[in-house]
Amino acid sequence: MKLIVGLGNPGKQYEQTRHNIGFHAIDRLADRWNAPLNQTKFNGMYATAHRPEGKALLVKPLTYMNLSGECIRPMMDYFGVAEEDLIVVYDDLDLPPGKLRLRQKGSPGGHNGMKSIIQHIGTREFDRVRIGIGRPDVPMAVTDWVLGRFSDEEVPVMKEAADRAADVCEAALARPFLDVMNEFNAK
Image (cartoon, rainbow, N blue to C red; front, side, top):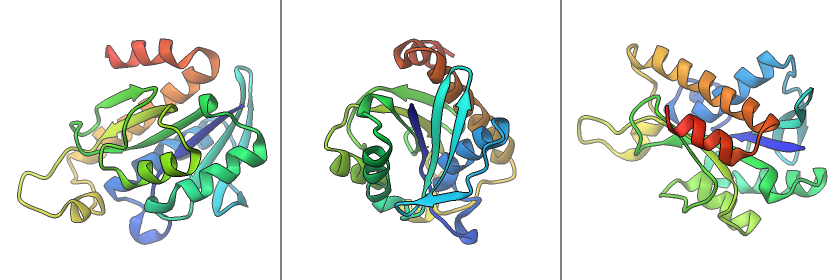
C-alpha cells in the first residue's frame, strides 16, 4: 500500500493559498478515484482507495504544515506503511509556478513541513513530488508569500500542476517511483 500525503494547512482561510497545493493534488486524486476524504485518524483526513494498480491511502494532515510529521508517522505505523511506500506532495519556492520536480530523497530545503516529516519518520529517503510556487517579484516575507493566494494568472497553471501531480501519484502505484521520476522530470 502507498501512503500519498498532500501537505497544507486546514481551514477555510488557507484553502486557496500557495502552501496548500499539496492538498489540491490529494483532492484531485480523491475525485478521480471516488474516494472522499471522510475519515479521520491521528489528526489527519484520509481515504482508502482500492485501485487496479494497488491500494493507496490518501492523507491530508490537519496538524498545520509545520507539524505534518505528527500525523504521518502514526499513520505509517498504524497502516504498516514503510518509508519506501510514502509519497509526499508539497509546494516549493525554488521552482517556477507549476513546475514539478520529483525526488526520492533529500533535505527539507527550508520547508518546515518536510522538516517535521523527516524528524518524525527518521529518514530523508522517501518519495517527493514538489510543485513550484515560485518566489515573489517584490520584497516580501516568505510566510506572506506561501500563505498568499494565487494570482488570477497563476490559477490555471496551478490547477494543471495539481492535476499533473495527481498523474504522478497514479503512475507511482503501477510503476517504480524511479521510472516515474525519470519520465516526469524530463517533461
